Image (cartoon, rainbow, N blue to C red):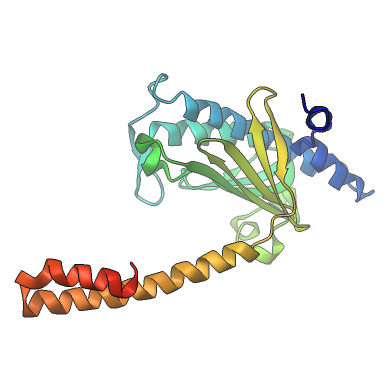
Length: 253
């Protein structure tokens, strides 16, 4: 038995503990953001569970409605939206909610009204639900200046005013990536504990930039290859298969 590994597992950095540590750096903080985040995390856990058992719970398929983008809503779309709206309102820390699944913004009533605006897509990529591939929740959080007189203008703030943003991806594992302006951290849901554990601290995009540049070069090659194939189709369709093979080796596509 690897005792070092076992010892490491006893000192887990959960997303709640991480948020409390960040809160400790700001003595003026009252913990409102930490409470709001805990409700977002709860929503993510609920949706992760629903996604995992979507087939058994008959949550796969169309709901018979469309969202504000004109896209047909899936059953999981509707459920996820309901889950997040209720979780965010019940936190008592939100003032305005903007969801892709709702035509109008939701203004929270006075007893539960807070100082934050949350913009979110409860289940992005829902067209892939029936295929069993990764889907996710996207969210961004803004501060409202006057919670008792909030308007749509408070929602239309530049991205530089966002105080936190993140996404939760539901796939082979459930991963939540969060930034509060002080770096980016990734947390993975441990099903046995029911907790998001810090697994990717201080994420950097250096490797990603290299990958994106590589993909861009590949796309440029594919563009030239596509042009050659079109020209060949016009000149000599019979040689098309041979030409495609030549282009494959030429461009390394």
